[in-house]
Image (cartoon, rainbow, N blue to C red; front, side, top):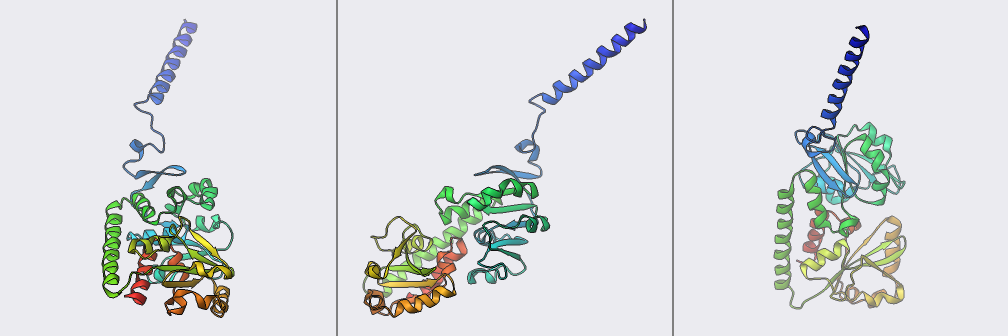
Length: 322
């Protein structure tokens, strides 16, 4: 009798365990941590180059890992608590002039190595980390995603298209309509500026961005940030190639055939190189130089890549040419 009771108890327990396992593994009841069904109430699933991330619906402690992400989030009306910015030294954060007023109150952390400091990011206690998809962020993605939900917004994957990058960033925050309004405003401003320039100038003209970096002289091309803006206005030379930039030697200054040159230097040492450049005999033969149509601009704004930098470029064009 006791043996029968023990056997019956064993079978009963076995049945209960089997029932629990079946229920737990049933497709109708199983939900993993990243499934939209399990997370819809608290966050939104965002697909990005490194997979999927459940983004909090009301993130309060956003950390941007690059000047590009910082600029885009601010343009969309979102204020991160902090940002990491690459700098030649860790002493000062190199903030572009067009961003300085807009990011007051945001904590900035400089880093001069290839990647931002993970310990610094951890101490910020973020609830969302956002960064462009670049080799640095992809290399740290696993560690970053252990600190907080992390989204790598497409960048190289979209050929560094700054307009598309704004749209992709907007998707993370459910701000697609805001991005559309911003880009429409940009297009309207470009159209008005283009018309004014056509009315004010008797002859069609072309413009280029020339910059000095580490002692070398470069000409911005069609796929560069400034190149896309000059092209939108109709000022870019039709001969400009589909590259980011073209190295220019002293002997090939004649290749800078634009009527107008906007010129900038990457760092202070480059500015001294720029002064030496102006004393070169071949530089004096460049058309824009002869016509006194060379204008100094901020390198970071013109090299830029974010939406606010685009308007800074338009500001310079209006200032000098309107």
